[in-house]
Image (cartoon, helix red, strand yellow):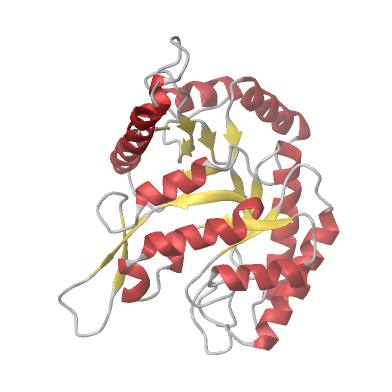
Length: 311
């Protein structure tokens, strides 16, 4: 091929295809993959029925199918059938307030986190996830004037170390999901926590919607998402899939969570960044019906097709 023609074809993107082996064309180049999952509304009584329900939905990731207190035999059965069928169990939710100002409530929440982390480790989930909590005495994950302070940051570090050290997981990670009014609330505060907690089995649960906290970020959330993956990528264990919209009829900014595809979250960027990581699940949440989850999944998969990502 003449040099001038090669330069032209390279600039147009055709040069690469022209020098590929004849059996390898653009249509056969392997797609990137993302593991999409969500709740299973269909009732199931056995691991086998669970797998059938997941396959009907086309999911390659799933929420933990058993609760704290399940027998070791049942946990093992679900772990093994998930592995056999290429299903990643994404997360065990430990939703509670381990920094509650009421010490008794905080103690119970810490114990729930420990038990949830044990379950996540036994079943081989990608992570056990919670929010860091709140100093609000009335709302376990609500805003409070003391949440974003050095004292609360230190308390989160102490509490998280206590949870991880009590379990010493080997198959999973304990993670904190970002909240707009509690640490971690940015990629940089995630990094501060990772450094301060200083535990190999502490990781990141990324929900980019929760990091959209202003009109500036809302309109440029793709930049925020890239920043999160650039800074946190190796520590990310699971992600949530939601969407967000900014109301235009309010005198003050009001950001509302909404079904994926109905808002402004930059899903092409989100999926492309997530696809660079290996087997990190993308889990839909906070919807009310199976139909809403189907609608959200259809949208996410359609975006995946536009960026050559298999869901």
